[in-house]
Image (cartoon, rainbow, N blue to C red; front, side):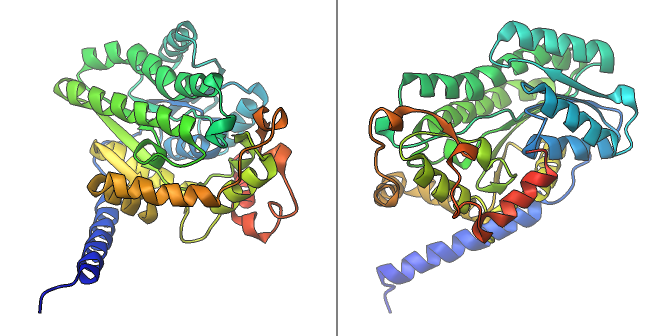
Length: 345
């Protein structure tokens, strides 16, 4: 009997599922590159995923430097890391503007002077700007590019001379599923994450010859507790409601601890790419095979999202914390709020 189009579609879906499951099992294997005695620099390390990554590095005996902008967050994060048994001198925290190339160079120089040559760089710092395209302006795109493209580039340029000289190194760039598939109401964010994916893949291709392995990480929805820090435009409360609830759904999201374990394992193995969460892998695979069809499907999703916010309020940036409602404080977001309490959010 000749297979119908529906049967073929189900076969493709099943194939994606099996491939995604096999990839999950493979990527949970631990590589041979040990963190003990290494120097690790983590940008955006004061909270959320960056802090959880730092905890695992400290627990494995690495010397760790974290950087972010908020000095109070950094002080709390450093005390958190010291509770994992690290000596006072092996955990440093720096307040820096990573979008300033000079500040990044001086940061790297100080870390290497106090902790030793940087063996592992984790470019994790990020911002989320959400809202309808009509409410976005050029500044939103510039801020996203500065944080997600220029800052990682400055950091990589600063650590690479030493890594080349030693003939080894690890760089991990935390992009997003939004860097593989453009997500409605996250256009500025997605555009900058697409740029980071291209930058990261290009660096990997050219640095492999020096023993330097660059890993591009594209997470789907993670329960890091960071939703309240997202900046929103348009109908702020409605935008935050769909964003924060989606970010806490069981089965569609991954805990920060699980994500950090997978990221470190990928770093040890020197993997080229890691896509986190099964839904993210399926959507990225579907987009790779049928980009036009996937984008058209997302266009239908866009119709269900909040409409453009009225001027001038809709053009204002407000954080998720400023856009809370009883709905976003309900049991629907409980998992994310619990993660936030654990991860200095």
